[in-house]
Every structure is written in structure tokens, then in C-alpha cells.
Length: 68
Image (tube, rainbow, N blue to C red; front, side, top):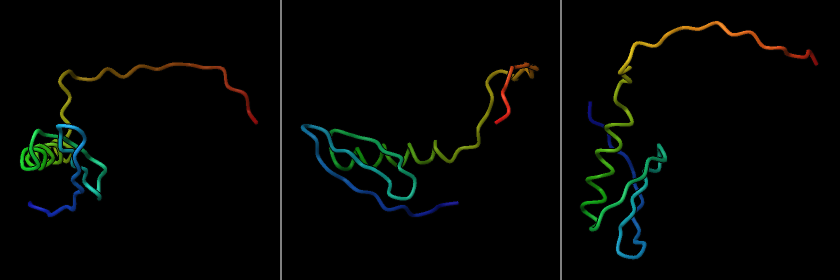
């Protein structure tokens, strides 16, 4: 599914910085076009389904807690 996002673009020194207004995801590049392409990639990664590289182990822990 494709979705449109709004982004701000500004220059800091030799780098262009982009930030998605809806998600607070940011990226940068040496040109404005590169920064926007990098932001697109960062957004795609942000919305990608998480995949565990190693099967997680479930552990039980006990801790002293005070009731307030």
C-alpha cells in the first residue's frame, strides 16, 4: 500500500535534512533529492513488519515491590 507523507527539508552545512511530519522519522543526504530518497527508505523500514532474528526466550523474574 502506498501512502503520501509531508516532510520538511532544510540544509545544515553541506547536508540536507528531511523529517516526516506525521511520524517524526528523519533522514539526510548530500542533495535534497538524496535526502528525500533516504527518507522514503527510512519510512518504508519504519512501517516494515518486525521480524525476530533469533527466537526470543521467555523468562520469569521476581522483584520486591512496595505497594503505595
